Length: 206
Image (cartoon, rainbow, N blue to C red; front, side, top):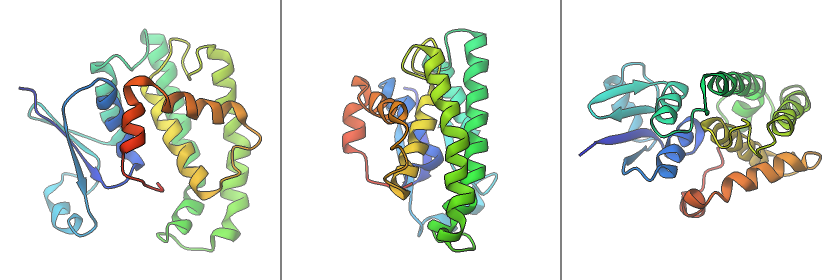
């Protein structure tokens, strides 16, 4: 029997896309959620001192997007052909740029970085939203599929909607001028294969 374990903290963060891919594919896997108390003891046992880690059939796979791409290729969520896969990979890199831009505000809000969140909000959240939300809206419009890629649902939809959900927890008005993105989140959350998971997963602000 194929043994699969996804090891990450007890939050959504960088591990949730992998969980969603496996749940969508209806694959049995161990969802190993590490607590803050367990983490110090586990750090020396990891190769990089970071999570997530995917254990797949005796192989160890590191780094979130490497895990996401590996699982997406296994379970047909990478894109319909090599060109669409390249498009999806590019959008994932754009998403990473968005996260980096917001990071100083995000870390301050979470109590893990310097500065006052109120002082950082305009430059790092508001200005970043004004830059990146139209990019996502344009990909949706061009795809005509309701998802980021023309061929339909891919792993990058999970990455983006999870991050947009996190930002909504920080600022509930963030999607007010972007109904297309609000509808997009709802569309992903109502995918039949995932509806039960979304409704039953542990609450996490990030």
